[in-house]
Image (spheres, one colour):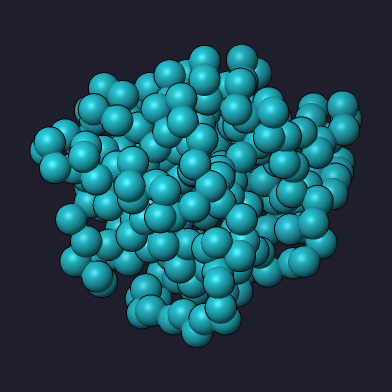
Length: 279
């Protein structure tokens, strides 16, 4: 496994792979890796000849400086996990390498940018698309793998790819969960033992909606799931919605198709998101 720190060295390494018409995949991460990230690398290895995993905590997507400051950075742990996962190349650039000078970045991501996460983390998806575009430019991948847990993020990245007409296929991979249902997240490390127990209500509310989807109307599902979340101590709900999987607008017709339930809540001092496909 090669560890690369500069764009120039990365391009030099990957150019012969491209010339040989071999497929390159990228798995962009912010580190603090877990089994969810490993599943992305496994999926990438099935479809590509070479897998690049980036580890970079991107400052432009954090709307709260304190959140950026406390984001976990266990680099030795990450490198060990990537080696065991069979990753070929790890790209670990500095902030200066990715942002050598100040930039003004703004692209039109449509109305969906301002819904849900966009409402609570204004400007977040501009920062996400900014760094993903930089990573795509550095790697020139054929495929890019992201986790379904960041459902809205995947939509935004697909819009960015369409905006620039990039020749890369964005692949969304299923959420990986702990045995008790909690969606794996780099932020879970910040949960206290009690928070960890309280956080289970997110997946329980989603599972409730999925298991009762055929017998109850959407209004009842939302009401009951919201009551579950609001009735759990230490959980501060931001939103729970059943939405169209493309527009993320609320949907009340069960026959509409492409429906997804999405939730975000602060559990103790840690903000968590989760979702579940309903059809």
